[in-house]
Length: 207
Image 1: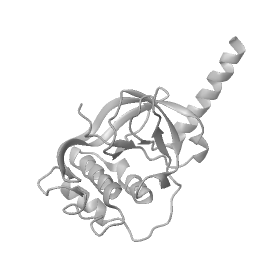
Image 2: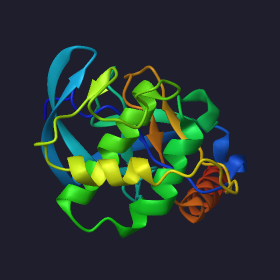
Image 3: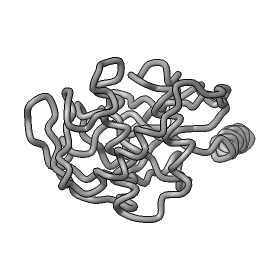
Image 4: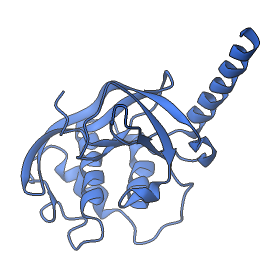
């Protein structure tokens, strides 16, 4: 799969800043709902797969993630660590979209639309064209799959909203450098953390 295409993945983890310590092993498991689209990114036409990205963390399959960065390609396996969403542009708005819509995605067009909306916010947030797909550094023609859905998602971002539990961004390490991810379920991370503790304890007993 050509991925100047699928950008850094962001999997929104609904809570658990306590899970942010240490490295985890991440594996790319393929795509979920998605559509191939062509976007204008800083003046260049780029054809990408827009939609759900499936990953495993420490061997446990996690829920679907969404991309947030055109600058790196996804790898098959890599290490990562958790950090604050404030490190990515439009982090709270992207997290709002994910928390509001990701669980209800049930078609290729909806998944592509959510991904396009996330990419748009990431690229142009804070500008006059932040929620307009026809302007700015990230542009999408109206004939592209998921366009109408993306417009709907962007137009429904409220001017203000009650803050939810901050998501956690999964930042890729450098060996190899892959995409940054968001992992949606704090319960998953709690189980993973517990599993790691159990494995370490078992190794010490059998050493």
